[in-house]
Length: 71
Image (tube, rainbow, N blue to C red; front, top):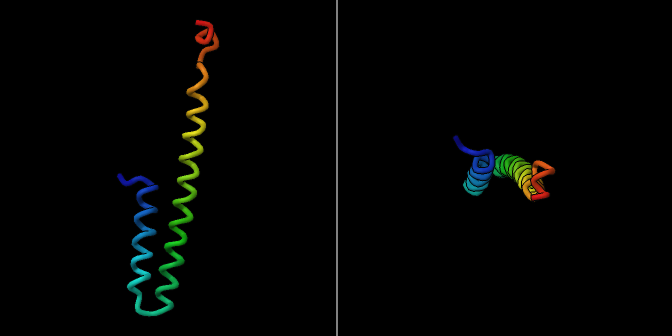
């Protein structure tokens, strides 16, 4: 199964390529709107991933059990 990051990145690239191939200005504008929507979703997912990685790194530095720090 494709990850959200990969999907949104792929779809944004596909829409930008389609915008370059568009015949009319209206079609180009629609494709760019779609590309922007996928890029915004990509940024949101990336922010969540970074946030969860930061949270995990903070938790990993502290012992789970208070008595484990005494050893």
